[in-house]
Length: 193
Image 1 (cartoon, rainbow, N blue to C red):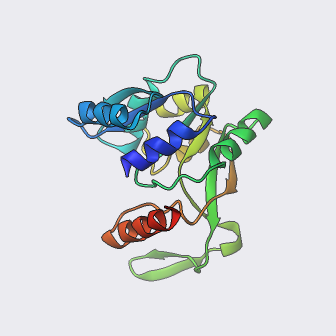
Image 2: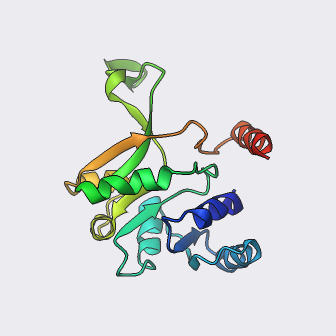
Image 3: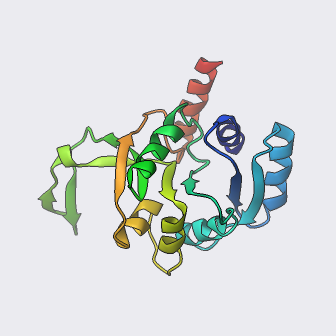
C-alpha cells in the first residue's frame, strides 16, 4: 500500500517533496523502498508519534520551511486518483486554510449515547472525509504545534479557526482497515492493469 501511494504522489506534478512518517524502526526500510521504486521526491522518513496528531507534527517538522502548502495523506488509502491533488490545492489559492475530499453519506446517521438515539443528523449536511488533505503550510504548522488530538488534520485546523473547503472525494480512495477492504483495493488495481 505504501508503494502504491508513493508512486502516485511521485507522479503528481503538484508534489515537490515527500516526507514519510513510518512506524518506529521502519524509517530505513521506507527509504530503501522509495529508492527501489525510483521515488526521488522522498526527502525524509521519520518515526511516527504516539497519536496521529503527533505523527503529523513530526512529519511537518521535516517539510521545507519555504513550502507554501502541505498535503497529508495516509498510505492506507493507496488509490490516490489523478487530479485530486490539484483539486485540493486550488482552494488554498482562493484564501482557504485547507481542503479535504469528502463523499456524501448514503446512510442515515444518528447520534447515540448508551444505546439510545439522541439525535438524527441531517444527512444532506454530512460528508465522509478522506485523505489526502491539503493545508497552507503555516496554518498546519500552527494547528499541530499544540497538544490537541484529532482523527484528521482538518479538525486541528478548524479548532484554531481555520476555514476548510470540501472538494469531491472518490469512492476508490477507500481506507484499508479490514481484509475485505484490501481485497477490494487489490481487485481495483487488477482492473486498472
